[in-house]
Image (cartoon, rainbow, N blue to C red; front, side, top):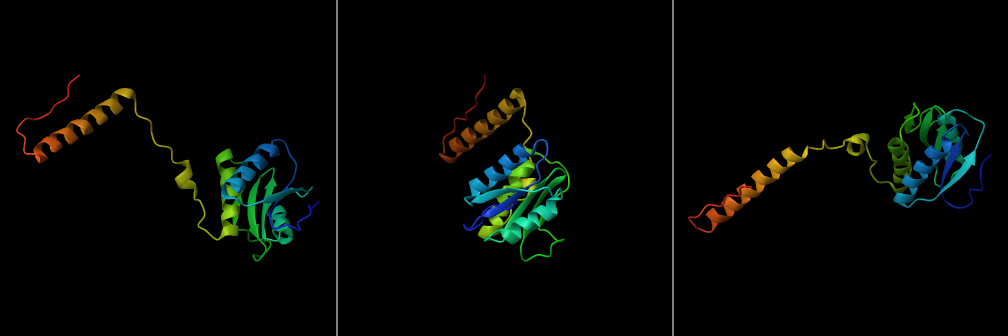
Length: 160
């Protein structure tokens, strides 16, 4: 069933299934962070692409998101029904679900999409000794360059 879409919003069409609430919450959080309103509708249609297209056609903003058991989809009403903008054909992760919210909102705003690599690349955490050695070397180098730049003969060295 489609909700009342008299106000401009992205329509999120959901096929209820176990765990859909978590997906919906993350998608909504991504939309909220981008400042775009949404409405939720539920359908017995299991296909995320079909759900997203239904939402896009009913939305005054022309953008719909489909959340099915097997994936997520972002669609625009000016695209052919079978050619969505973004499709996730697996259950996915909370980070991916939120990115779908971001990107649906960014489609409305006409700004660049968030890509997966920028969000999923997590820097490797160094162990304490490696980090300490790196910071120690940098500080030592800066102190030596500072002393040399001021014409002083004395060289600095930190030892612990």
